[in-house]
Length: 390
Ligand SMILES: Cc1cc2nc3c(=O)[nH]c(=O)nc-3n(C[C@H](O)[C@H](O)[C@H](O)COP(=O)(O)OP(=O)(O)OC[C@H]3O[C@@H](n4cnc5c(N)ncnc54)[C@H](O)[C@@H]3O)c2cc1C
Image 1 (cartoon, helix red, strand yellow):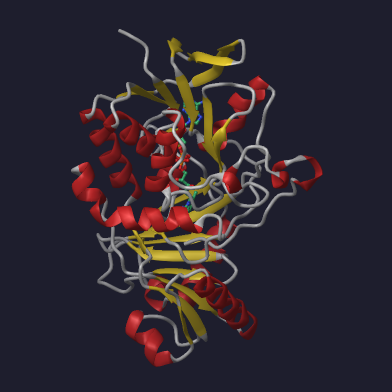
Image 2: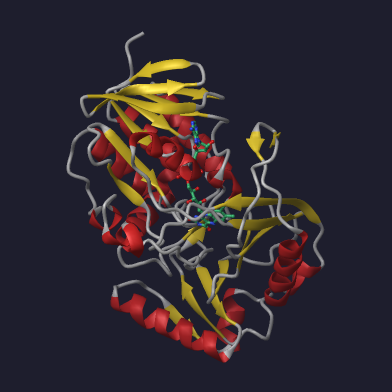
């Protein structure tokens, strides 16, 4: 069999949406994943799809993605569970009210439709079950959420229909190159020649880059996730908070899925469960998350817990991803460092990666996501705190 034009490392939302776009454009694509689709961040995620709270440089991607999400189910021919029910970012004290007020002013100046709500009536209309202690919120009606595992599966199936090959349970050990040009990948099962390679492997990206003398400064914190048993409808929009220390959404099946903020993580990834790597949250983090969400949304406090897990983030110093050609290695592209908000923009990221792999000018500017930007260099590369999520 002839080698693929493009080999993609990682079957999360980033790798799978790139695979779909490339296969649809007629390229021969192979995707390799140590586990399988949505095994890491794209399965661990809250899966909010938001423009609000985005860095100005990321807003064009978020807007493009929000333009794509409503038609994604019909385009891919599989469910995404996408709902465009908005995003409420809450203020729990006077200082958070000022943070939210500032956020709304800044983002409205960038053209985003975002309201500042500081009366109970307006908040209650959007989220009637919200605690009466909430003082104010921003509301972005065009934000929403989706099911991450279903969405990635829909991308995989659509890419396969266009001829893409998925190799699950195959770990990529190194990128092989010669004379500064990519030749292929060395994997746990052998060697795969390829015309170009995309590293879309999340927290694993530096394992491959370091063998090429490159790296992206990443901090890898943990986020606790709690999923309840199904409840009657209690929450339509995604909930976030001004300082990003928790977030929540109600899935289409009624389960609440809630997250903590980013917390230090010093452990190893444990055994696999259902073929996916497992990260265990701490009891202290679970307790904090239950308390915080219970204070925002009282029905959560009475719900039964169905599942608990933790996820890991690939956090860059400026909390922006790297989406770029790797300097000095022709044919190597990297898309990682999504810093806790790469799910919502996944459909737009896939389009950009397709452009890069086909040698075209990317349809949206990627200047802010460059591999060599000052924020990632030397002493500037201080770890970031988590920017707004949910
Ligand atoms: C708890 C949590 C909440 C979040 N909430 C949101 C949110 O509300 N909204 C939002 O937009 N984003 C959110 N994010 C972030 C978002 O989920 C991620 O940015 C996004 O899923 C990243 O997708 P990815 O495809 O780049 O990486 P991943 O989904 O991590 O995929 C990388 C894949 O690469 C594979 N891999 C790694 N190394 C190798 C190797 N050497 N060989 C082969 N395969 C390899 C892994 O198995 C994995 O499947 C959240 C993340 C977490 C953890």
